[in-house]
Length: 288
Image 1: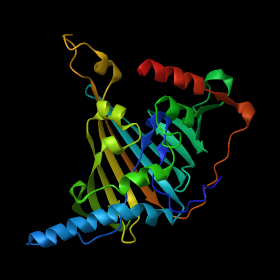
Image 2 (image 1 turned 45 degrees about the vertical axis):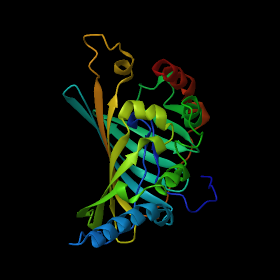
Image 3 (image 1 turned 180 degrees about the horizontal axis):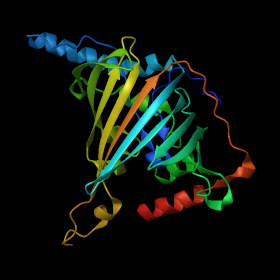
Image 4 (image 1 turned 120 degrees about the vertical axis):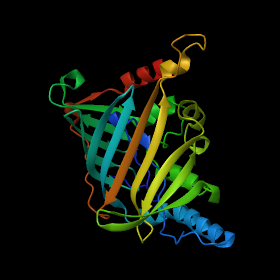
């Protein structure tokens, strides 16, 4: 994998494909954060939490890589589906190798230099080849975002530096995979995210994000909850009797363990890959 040469990048991972390109932001340093009787101690605790979240990108970046477990629960019209994933991720450049399972189907996924490769169950990939390929940079460009925004941790890190004391609240402690962590809730200003104006129309002005941080200031768990208006609902006439917005709720939880583990992300042989970038761009135009 190619390195960016910037060791102070971290904690953003473009999880594309079946996981809808979830962009993860946040993490932090373990702060005291316990509320005191006085306003001064309460303010001090809140400031500690804010510093923790701001500094966590750098602290986690120092570990370079990690194993990751992912759970995405999607609910709409009274029904829900859950996708699970596990694998390894390069916290510096966003490369990853994962196995995803949804509705009993297993998908192998790799992200290499901002290109997504997926291997669906046998016989389900278009083009008669086992792998499909989507250039995430071209998809991001169509959406009007910086071509790095889907996988460049520096984009998210820049946002983290702008978090203020009113955005961060300490929620308590928890043990995750045998590690004691401190739980913070962060209110994410959607306008500060890549393509924020468009995203704001779909999910609203803010997103609730929870992070669990170990005593070394590294992120161990991150959870993001989104309520998304479907494009069809957004485009309906307000006079339509059936124009009540249809919504999809998505909860994404990602756990990080085994920092420093080896990541080997290799491109599939070219003869086994069907390029689906054009199809993805075509679908993107229909939704816009």
